[in-house]
Amino acid sequence: MKDLSVYVHVPFCAVRCGYCDFNTYTATELGGGGSQAEYPTNAMREMDLTLAADRAAGYDYDQISTVFFGGGTPTLLPADDLVAMLTHLRTLLPLAERAEVTTEANPDSVTKDSLQQLADGGITRVSFGMQSAVRSVLRTLDRTHDPERVPQAVAWAREAGLAVSLDLIYGTPGETLADVETSVKAALACGVDHMSAYSLIIEGNTAMARQLRRGELEAPDPDDMADKYELVDDLAAADGLSWYEVSNWARTEEHRSRHNLAYWRGGDWWGIGPGAHRHRDGLRSWNVKHPSRYAAAMTDGSLPVADSERLSAQDRLLERIMLELRIADGLPVHEVPEETRSMLAVHRERGHLDAVALDAGRAVLTREGRLLADAVIRDLVP
View 1 (cartoon, one colour):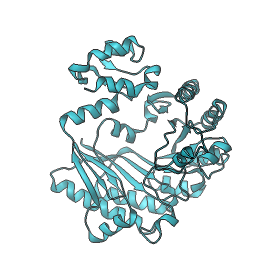
View 2 (cartoon, one colour):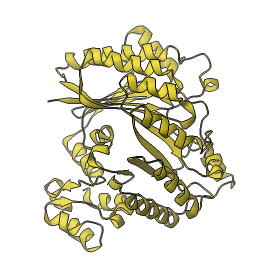
View 3 (tube, one colour):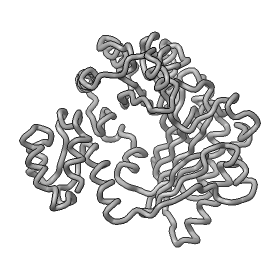
View 4 (cartoon, helix red, strand yellow):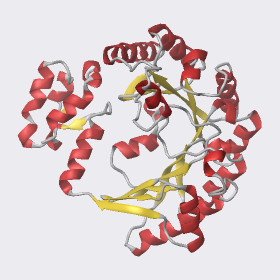
């Protein structure tokens, strides 16, 4: 069956975090453009237009296998709005049996009742932006939630029948190894079956980057980041979670994020909302970024596409190497171009690729290889 994934970008946040480079807006930044109240209706219009465009181009899908409400903070919208968008999707294409439907959330943007509403409306999974359990680290990141709220929110979600993932960030300026240990242990103590841990990347146009340039913060040290990654991996493994992508751990294969795996494996997906990207059989397009321009396009009844590109066969191959090498299933050796295939043996000798997996025809990163994933990928790309 031809499966489709759907990403719905909800671009609203209560506060802009200092490290965030995503396409998000606070109420103050938006002014009078692109209101939260109008957003669900506009998103549903875009779903209609996207389906029509796909069918006009000769593409159709049997079912939607995954849905992901991301942001921003999707749960700033009322639970009924998220459910309404999901319900509308179901009228366009059937959801697969046991489809994975995730929403991101901040721990302070949900209640026991709102989580139950989401579960009753078809959401199956919630991904909480925990980031850290240490108050000083949360302050540096401009996060607004109380760390003690996290276990309460997780308990509410599990009581509602939702699968739960916790997202962490390590490498915040001033964060110690002990702080990371505190945060990971706090996340695992919640009993979750999925955890993400991302190294902090300070993008050039963020408030945190400006603080770095002014000397108010110290830049993350690569060796320190590596130590913190290894600590995360050790603690996750001790709790029974295994890595399945460089920055993601799950208790079983069933607990892996199927939506993210669809990205990493080059599947087709719709991107709904301001700035969202979509992919269809090598054609990638992306929407206008600002919510007011997006709303204007919906009023006109036109797809809000800002631009698009058709990936060449070579581009798709290179992208496959970059993405699939980062997952635990690895990359088939025969997919590596002949001119760089000799580097597989080099990285095996360096301890970056698993020898047993390589003998079986797959390039799989060792833990040391995960720390140097970008370098390994560069050597395999012509």
